[in-house]
Length: 151
Image (cartoon, rainbow, N blue to C red; front, top):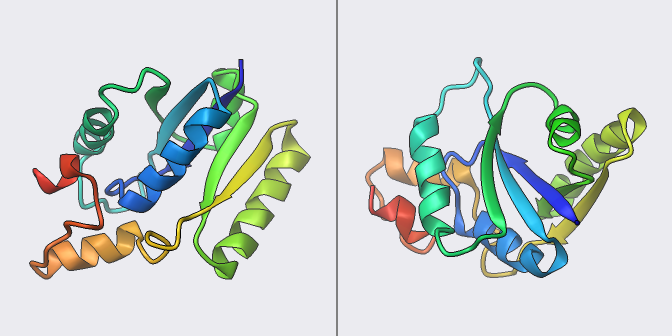
């Protein structure tokens, strides 16, 4: 069984994340959306809200699971017996950052990182941009799935 973890804070999940997940579905038997918990980070949405956004968006997709974790991504991969880490790339800066992490993960384990390029129509979207729009009272339709806009 080919299983992948798609790690992130998903604060909130965006249409960029959804694009990567949806395009990866044919590649894997199961994709675990792994919400990383960092005690030092201030989140806009609670962990429960972030889990709910993802589960609501994928309510009819049995290949999607949601987990939470602390610590290294490779440790949850080992714990859940996952061989692949899924990552989306929006731009060259993302590639350089993600490449270094992938190489470190590969040095510490046998886990492979699979990169997918974001679609042109979602490549500008980030959770940071969405949070900034929300903080300033803007409309985030077109940036996030309906499960988030309902909030």
